[in-house]
Image (cartoon, rainbow over all chains, first blue to last red; front, side, top):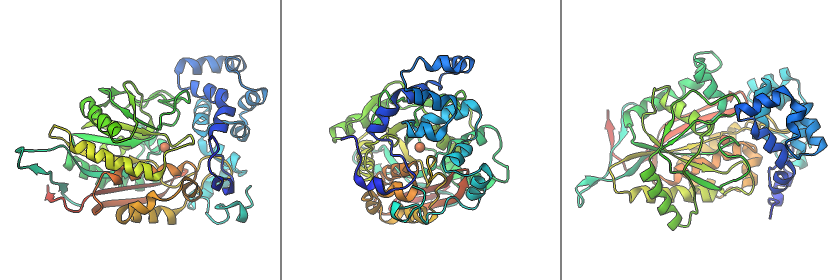
Length: 132
Length: 303
Ligand SMILES: [Fe+2]
């Protein structure tokens, strides 16, 4: 059983990193995780596309990495904790990644967080939600 | 909570004090807090209220002076890749290096282990039906080192030994809240049967509410977090019955790691006294909290 209980399906705007996601994103995450080693960071920085050929990921996944398409990586099986390595390497604040993923400007996102975070109203259940 | 320190149990028959979990604390393990500490920025107006909320914990811990801290934490694809995902892993080595998480390892002391107690706990847990993964080499990430910095500050060497217990809360299937709670009870039993005079503090880490991916990024649920802190004190068994889906719904996919706090709670008595409690929103994307408690029956010493 790789799919968690149906109760998860009702939660909007959330990707459950389950067995299916693990299998879909395995090579993508293997690449992202490789960036915890300094030598790999150096090699990747010197030629990004070439470094990616070491991992048997899909064309789409490779593209998403090179374009820094964060929602795309997530969609294609990227694990959020693996993705932090790439953001750190680029010097991209993670709030920016979060802003992009939730369709907000950095300013809007920062203001929302400083005002106490994303309110719970309308984000508990797909039945009451407009965020998908 | 001025000058309150737990008193140890003296075993009349054996004429000595036994190994015992004397208290527990829980704290968030937000990686950014580690970077703020390392960068000497804790006095900045944005961060200062958070670190102020840790001052009483630091003071209390310095008075308690534990020999060992058992730290329940999770790895975030740093010490482990997805090549292996142990559900529960225990660090049995003499020391653990801080992990490189993408920008070089944190400049904090190497984490000293307590191999003999760790092996004893492992043996007791496995015989008690908790099939632990035994780690003889393991790098520890912010999930463990940030809590150490928050409660111990920036010493040259960490003031006590540490037994890391790593829980998989990033890949489904994950252990349930009930299982994490039961693990705490089993750890308590294991420590109690250890043949050496040791003062142990158990630490739960992670949370509080936050989600850092997808359209729900930025979720904060103050109401649930505060109710969680209440129930962690009075009725933890109730929290142990909550499903993964409900935790994810209420505290976010990443905030659901808060179930690790239940392991700390399971290791204490049903009746506890809360010595300190703190809650703050936000630390960038996350609600930050901490709580310190000890068994209600334990005698309090004014230091
Ligand atoms: Fe965590």
